[in-house]
Length: 261
Length: 143
Image (cartoon, rainbow over all chains, first blue to last red):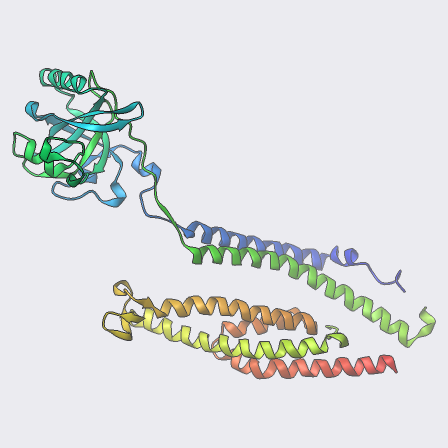
C-alpha cells in the first residue's frame, strides 16, 4: 500500500501546493516587513539625526536671540556673519581638549542684525598663549563669516567666579563681562569650526543622539517575526494534512478490502 | 474533506475547547471595549484617563493626558489577547484537523464585533460533533 500512497514531497510539488507556498512566502514577507517597520518605530530618537546637525545651516534658521537652544538643534552646525568687539575677549580656564586641559578664548560677536553671540574661538595650552592670541585678535579680528557648532549655554554656578576663576561658558555671565551692552543675545554659544592664528581648534565631535527604546514596538516586531514563521509552518501543515488525508484513504481502503494488500 | 481528529487526541481537544471558550469571551469583551474606545477617540476626540489630576477616571483630550491612558491600554491589551485567541484557535484547528477555511473563520472572531460570542457556542458544538464522528469511525475500524 505504501507504494500507492504519494510521499509528502510528491504532494508538495503539485502546482496547487507550490502556489500555496508562494502565497505563504509572500505573506511571511509582508509580516517581516511589518516587523521591520515596528523595529524602526521602536527606536525613538530624542535628538536630531546626525545628518541634520552635520549640515551647515544659517543661524537665523536655527536660533533666535533671547531664546534657549532647542533640543533638536543642539550641536547644529551654523554659519553667520558677525563683527567681533575688540575689548570683549574672555579667557576660560580648565577647558579640556583632546591634547589636555587648557584655555579657551571666547569672543563677543555682534551678528549682523544686532544681537550678540558668544563664540568660543579656540584653545590654547597656557594662559600666556591665550593672552597672546587675544592681543593678536585685537589687531587682526577674526573673519566676518563664522562657522561652528551651536551649543546651549553652560551653567554659571559651576565656576568659582567670585574669586575670579572662570571655567564655564555661561552666556549670562559673559554679558556682565562684555564692555558693550548687547542688543539681545543668543541663548547658546558657537564653537568656531576654525581657530584663528595662535590658537588650536576646539574639538567638537558631532552630538550623540540619545535613543530610547520603545519595548512595546520591540515586542510587536517579535510578534510579526513569529507570525512570518507561522505562515511558513502553516504551508507545511496544510501539505501534511493533504498527505495524511490521502494516506488515510489508502489505509481505510486497504482495511475495508483486504485484497488490496 | 478534512479527516477529523485522532481518537487519542480527544482528551486534549476537550481541554483546548475550554481554553478556547474562555479566550473567546475575553477577546469578544475587549473587542467591544476597543470599539467604544474608537468611538471616543475618533468620534469625540477624547481618551479615557485613569488617575489624572481631576479624578480616578474621566475623558480627556489625548494630548493633555498625564495619568494612564486607559484607551491605549485597551488597544494594546486587545492586540495581545487576540494573539492568545489565535493561539487557541490554532491548537483547536490542529487537533481536530479542520479545514483551513474554518481556522480563518474562527480567527475572524477577534476582528468582527460580537462574532466571538456566537463562536463561543458554535465552535465547541462543532468540535464535539467532530469528536463523536471520530469515535464512531474508531469503533467501526476496531470492529
